[in-house]
Image 1 (cartoon, rainbow over the protein chains, first blue to last red):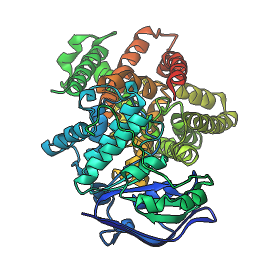
Image 2: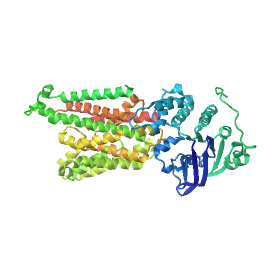
Image 3: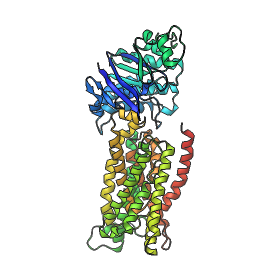
Image 4: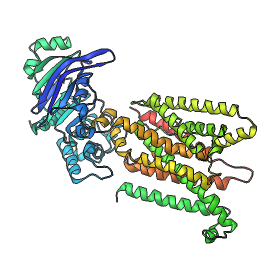
Length: 256
Length: 328
């Protein structure tokens, strides 16, 4: 189990502060979904959570230790991060790409060990891409790429996963597939923090929803409360009579 | 043995064969071996020991430096067009060396020339990182390279412009064309430690380059210390390229062609590409220099840098065209 605390965090780009005295805690596993309009500060919050940005004031601490004080390698073992752009510069095979997730655990000049290989295979199983292991990344469909990148993130076996829009540019079936992978991971005790655009997905899969607008957290709680009609209209400037309801769609091939 | 193991073994074997061919092709043949270690060497033996052997060894070192630096730069910038020549590192090293030649530093103490080359390369690659360091697009990288190349070229031209006499001018001009023909054990003694140190530093970057495939943020999240890696790449490239350019002039496109040809053979893993590219660079320069030596007549010295550029430039054009097509 891990616990991540934002304590009075200020952060901005240039002169403009985006986050002001933000305090938040994530603990106890489950999926926390971050929603909000473009530019709300979701990606910034996630990068702070992953230690990729340092707060101007305040601190982000993992199990009581500020991320800035953690050795990079130790932090990398504790926090898995999935970047939003989802590209690979080189057309590596899926297995080699997933193996990158083992980087924080590997010793210099050593080949992959038995632990590494087991974690890689398990991550590919979890994401349903075991049969694609030998395929080149550039020959995959968008849905397969998203799964391969999530498998890369899972392969590190970090207790905290921070994912920036893993469902972007995916059709509804693949969005559901990705969220189900995250739900399975959360069931094993992993704390998942994920930014999503589709509010119905957040409502359906998240144990906790955080709604952001212009760096502020408008609502934080269970989906039915956080995605109420009032919050949604304030955050997104759209009408959502009755609030957001979870989608009832499910992939045909899924276990549900 | 893995596929990469076979590749490394194959390239190493090829290099041994090429070195052997290079040593014994030409005016003197195998009989020269008889007196290699004797106290009263024959003329053939002297040619082998004092001219050909250092020339071949220098080619191996310079080629390994260029190939390794090319592979690491391409991996770090996530861009198949990055090459010490294309992005101006070789030209900067050349400027450093020409400065040393021009001001007579090179005749003051022998290490001055290679050190000036390394300093020039260091300045060039630092400038490049300052302009194109963070997640630069292919366009930004190449434009930065054009700028660094232009700057180094302009300053080199200024020194040539101000050259005190035509002989100094000719010396600089011929030297810039890139050649191994003047290699001696002295050059080896000064360049080898620098190049070898550069190769050793470049060899440590493999894991980080792999992680960088998925972008800088992902690499940092995987535990890569980006600032340290940047310094490592700057130092390794400057030593591996600068040390070579200072004694052999600018030998272009080796760092572009070799990693590109070998990349599919290591399943496109940037870290796994470094060692094969060093061997492949050594192999390419050795063969190209053998070709140059056999083609050169008494009145017509052919320059190695000219030949590699003649092969490399069309390859570069082709690469620009194909990478435009597949770029997302």
